[in-house]
Amino acid sequence: MQKTLFAELKTIILHYRWNFAKGLSFIILANFLLIFNPMIFRQALLALDPSSGSVTDKSGWLVRWLPSAFTSSIIFWGLLLVSIAFLSALFRNKMRWYFFSIGGDVEKKTRSLLFSRIQSQSMAFFDNHGTGELLSRLTNDIT
Image 1 (cartoon, rainbow, N blue to C red):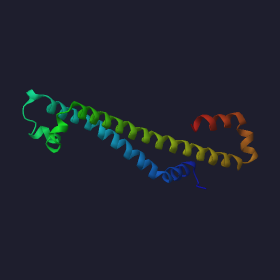
Image 2: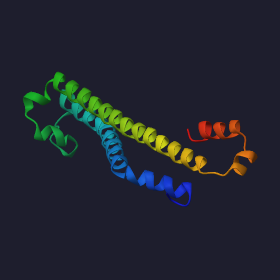
Image 3: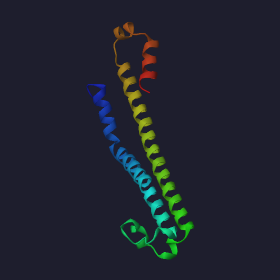
Image 4: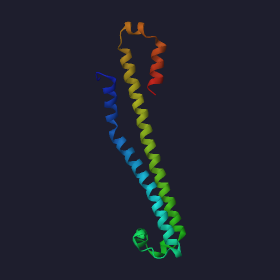
C-alpha cells in the first residue's frame, strides 16, 4: 500500500493507461472523420454539379482517384457521407465505453482502498469522526 491515497490513485490510473490510450485514439479518429465529412460533401457538390466546370483541378482531389461511374452517382456520395458519420458515431461510442468502464473500475478500487484504510484506524479515530460522516464522505466524495 502506498503512503498517500493520491499515490495509490496514480498507481490505479497508470494501470489503465492502455485503455486511456485506446479511448483517446477513438476520439481522435471520430473527430478526424467529423472534420473530413464536409470536405467529402464539397467533393460531392463539385462532382454532381455540371455547372461547376472541371473537377480535376486541385479542389477535386477525391474525384480524380475514383471512377467516373461512382462520382456521378448521388447514391454513392450519400452512402459515403452516411458511412463516415456512422463510423464517427461508432468511434465515439467506443471511446465512451472505454472511459466509463475505466471510471467505474477506478471508483471500485478507490472505495476498497479507502475501506481497508478505515478498517485499520484506531478507536480514537472513530471517537472523533462519526459513522454517518464517514459514510457520507465515502459515498459522495468518491463519486
